[in-house]
Length: 158
Image (cartoon, rainbow, N blue to C red):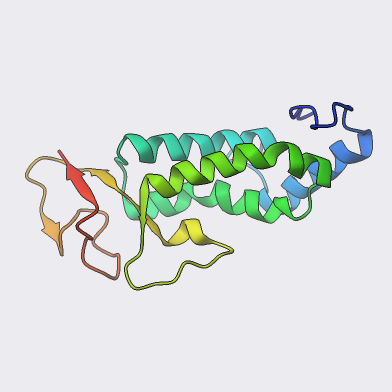
């Protein structure tokens, strides 16, 4: 069973609440490569890993970045199905990770952020690239498909 931190009221989760968490995650996240199901904790761990990678300087391409954001999308989908006590317990953690992600990224220029999927319209502030790699509209290879020139707030490090 996916053991989450105890709710703020200190009472352990009920079997029904654990089942609701399992259902919420399986309904929105599916299974990992290899068939293992996601858990709420594994989705949070994946989101934490993405946030940390972005803070340190993202080394992969835009399609990979989009694929890695799947964990945040799954969290959003599961969130509305989670028992209220679980949401209340995990909200500070989610808010902290989201705040870190926003600080480590910039919004797409000229586009309003979708409040339901705001993480999909952001770009890491720091991108790693190979020295001497060609650039298209300022973007390193793997990012040139973005529909706007590289914002000055995005730094390319080699």
